[in-house]
Amino acid sequence: MESNHPFVLLPPARRRAPAVLQDTGMQNITVLSGGTGGARFLQGLLHGIASGSLPGVATDATVTVVANTADDIWVHGLKICPDLDTVMYTLGDGIDPERGWGRRDETWSVRTELAAYGVEPTWFGLGDRDVATHLVRTQMLDAGYPLSQVTEALCTRWLTPVHGAAVRLLPMTDDRVETHVAIPDADSASGRRVVHFQEYWVRLRAQVPAETVIFVGLDDSAPGPGVIDAITDADLVVLPPSNPVVSVGPILGVPRVREALVATRAPVVGLSPIVGRTHVHGMAEQMLTSIGVEVSAAGVGLHYGARSAGGVLDGWLVDERDADQVARLTEAGIACRAVPLMMSDHGATAAMAAAAVGLVAG
Picture 1: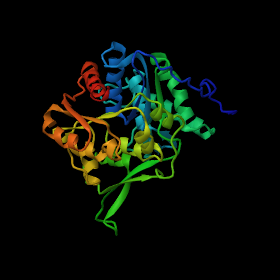
Picture 2: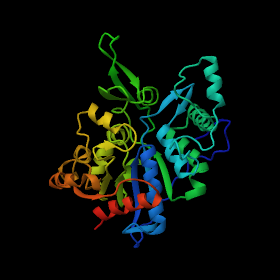
Picture 3: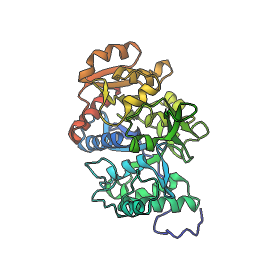
Picture 4: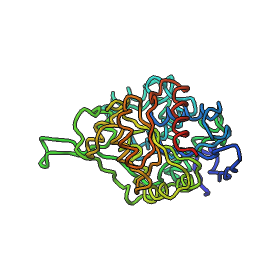
């Protein structure tokens, strides 16, 4: 694609050579990821691969991340992709480890100046370092590059120096998809109003009931380049402990993605984001309640469903505290085991990844 776009330092998109399957074990792993929880799981997964602690997985295995883009939002004329950026910064060693999002050593002069002008939204702050990513992304999108090529270009800064060709980050779609949440509003004639997911999460802090979740544009979207192949050509597909409704849910809702999961030769295994009948991080409890799904490890596993019965799972890990729910999942046709599921450090998370692989490998 030829362009007169002024940002010439980013290379054009490159075709990724297909990995060669070796006899040493699983070579291609695909992870369907949201932001913070998915990124932390990916850190442990990569740690486990490098250390050789994942049963049946090659130490030179490649990981393809299909990331949720339904959280995306336009702010101050800039395209913000929270989940893509959280995965990119985390795996590229640029994330703020305490917040779990945004850049390390961030400053906030731009946010302060915008607030001084009274420019809305004041509840969504862009850090000074972070805003550079959004400026580059928006300029490239305006020049006609699709989000998948923009993401590949951005990753040449963040992922390539750290992981080479071993990690690839793909948007679930190049099309515009946005998550909106209906909340109660006594002043509205309908008794409710609809807000963007980021407003629900950042401004309202998910402290009001979510009556329903709406994915605008999802039904008309198409899988991003490489997404279907990443699923059908995988040796293992993993659903990490990301939010099942607003993180993994939109990825599964992209046309053809669920069908690819059902058809892939790879085993599909997931890890519960619900531990002891509550979410570990985020707002999975509120989101599950909004769609009428039981807030429990078993409830989420059954929501995804057994692949043998038209769902997407072959295996599902629950936390030790939820061991009493294993039988429900097993009876539904999903292999299940109870193991520690707290991502306290890379080693503990790698052990989770090893348990997930062991559950469905062989």
